Length: 288
Image (cartoon, rainbow, N blue to C red; front, side):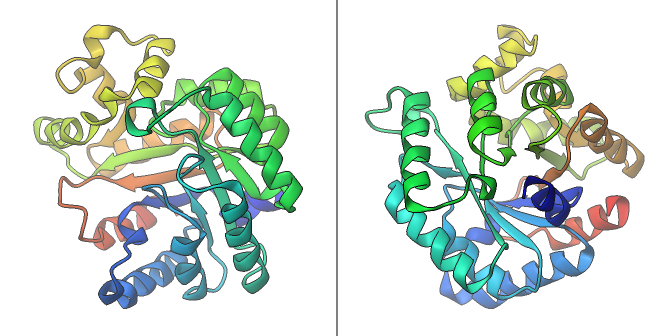
């Protein structure tokens, strides 16, 4: 089934927090955008912001075949029994269309955060007992232990805020079978100063979270790279910006490093309420 999942998500997807909006007045707009992403040839929509099956279901209902996944659902946000019920309901209505992406979030964001690896393994145990198949769940894995868990007890990994070097290391841990689908941010701006300013404004929040900063240090970045919103070196590693040729080259580097699928997040510096539909169209013409 991992092979089937790889084929169904294809080589490119869209990562979006905007598409998980709970505003009922925006339902038509969100459904229309999801249908267009499908027509553009993207294989998956990954919903950010602690999304759940409830956020995915309307988009699945508004489309014909595109896969919708959570990227991620925090194991601290919703208990495993509720997650299993949500998965089962969506699976019954739309077989094969929903992927449960799980993660352990971050200490500063979760009250009583403790033993994240044990929390994930316990959560997976409960999903097993509830009948949620391992090949329909993926983990937001950064470090070696969580990547091994992605290999052994899930369909693969959906690392967030990573580089091609991380992807190469992750592929080495996962082996050839499991899905590897990193998220990658795109700033559609050719000017270096403006692009880096937009990127830093977005990156700053993540540099307060130790799971990400530890991963950057593992990848060879220094404390100086993490200061003041991120060095040029760090920004240029975790964001694609520039002309179409440069953006294509940066995305291709993930595939060359071993990614099966790249989840593309457009970063514009906007408020997050506006769907970047024109930018998605440009990415589709460039990549898909």
